[in-house]
Length: 408
Ligand code: GLC
Image (cartoon, rainbow, N blue to C red; front, side, top):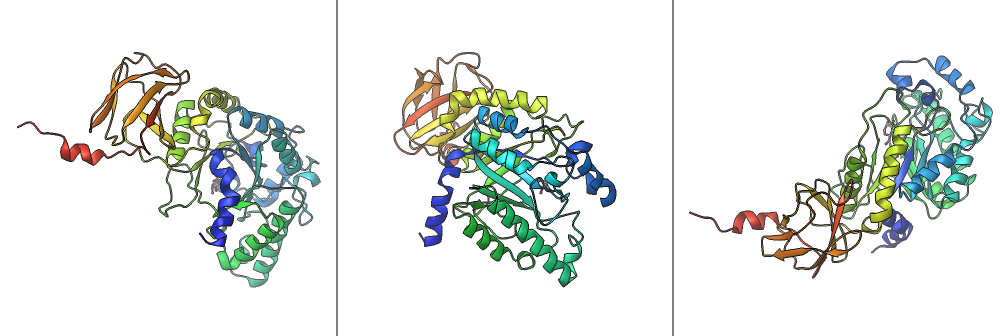
C-alpha cells in the first residue's frame, strides 16, 4: 500500500462502516416546487428567478428535523446542498450577496445544518455545485480567460469559506463541473487546499478528479475499477429538490433493497429528501423513512460494517456478508420451503432473525434447502436469515448449469 492509499483507508474507515447517508436538496427551487432544475428547464431569466431570494425564509432550525429523521432511519451521515446549480448560497459568503444570510432568510443555513447534524451524532457532508447558472462568469468562463480567472477565484474562495467556517467537515460533495475541465477549474489546487484545511475529509469525483469515491446516480452500478470506493445517490421520488406534484415514490421495500444491494457490492447508499420551502420534510418521505428506520433498528447490524458479498443470485432474496456469516434478505417470501442455489460453501447453521430460531436445512453441492419455515413472511418489508458458513461464502451458478446430472 502506498502512503496515499494508507491515508485514504484511514480517512474512509468510518464511511465504509457507515453505509447509509441522507442527501438533502434545499434551495430557492423549493419555492417553485417543480424540481431543482426548474430555472434552466423552464428558461427562467436570472432577474426573475433571483427574486425568490427575497421570499425564501425557511423556519429556523428546520435542519433539526432532517437530522433527527436521518438518525431515525439508521443513516450515519448527512450531506446538504450548500449551493446548487441555481447559484444561491445557503451559507454566508463574503464573495456574493446572493446568499441566505443577506436575503429574506437572514440566517446561515449551513451553520444551522452543521449544528443539527452534529447534535444527532451524524457525520457532516457539504454538497457544492461548480456549475453556476447565476454567476455572470458561470458560462463565459469557457471562452474568456479573464472570466475563467474571476470565476475560479470565486469558486475556490467559496470552497475555502465552507472548509474554514464550519468546523470539521467529513465529506465534500462536488457536483457538475460544466463548463470547465480539471485544468480550467484548477481542481488539483482546489483539492490540495481542501486537504490542508480539512485533513480528514473525503472528497467525491465530480470536480473531474477521481477523488476518494465514485458517485453513480439513481442506479446501483459499481465502478469497474477494483477496490474503488463508491456511493449510489438516489431520490425517493423522481426529483432531488422539492416537487409538489411528483408522486412517484419508491416503497420502503424498494429503498431497503437498494441499500442492501449497495452494501452487498461494497458501496454506500445516499438517499435524498427535498424539503418544502419552510424546510419541512414531505410527509411521504417521513413515512418511508420511519418504516426504513424500524427495519434498521432490528437488522442494521447486517448492514453496517458488512463486507462485499460474492453471493448474489436469487429471485426473491439479496445478501450481505460479515466474515463467514451470510445474511439472506428475503424481499418476496416464498413460503415454507425454498433454496439458495450454487452456494459452494458449507453452511454450519441457519437461523431466522431477529430472534435467532434455528432453521432446518439440508445442503448438497447444488443447493442449500430450507424447510419448516413460516408460510407467511415473518417480517416486513424484508425478512432475514442468518447462515453461518465454514468459510467466506461463495456462489457459483455455472456449476449448477454445467454439472447438474441430466436425465436422458
Ligand atoms: C445531478 C443533478 C442534480 C443533483 C445531483 C445529485 O448532477 O444535476 O440536480 O443535485 O445530480 O447527484
